[in-house]
Image (cartoon, rainbow, N blue to C red; front, side):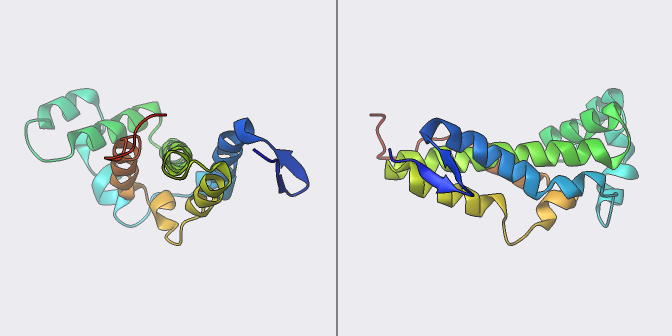
Length: 156
């Protein structure tokens, strides 16, 4: 594939996924120092079922989204401030951006189109899904859907 020129840097096929991950992290790096806001308080801060593994396990039989609550619990145990929660959300966003690149490349067989598509995904028009921690289910849904091979697409 021909080198693709971005900001004067030649990026070959192998570096495109790395570049996408770096862009996805850089775009939302300022969210790392954000605070809990809006529904974060009801879903995380004031919810005792996500403050310890024992409380999560006791609550596991009731309610919904236990995997989501487990991620909140593990974040809370790592530190009850919002920084770790934002790190997790940004890393999930970077992984999903890479998965968009991978899926688009598999569908189009064109790394340039896949790269441009993933760059658009890196900075979505709805950025509150990164900064509002209670919107984490979106990352889990994207991350579980994107790696699937679409019907009719054969590995080649």
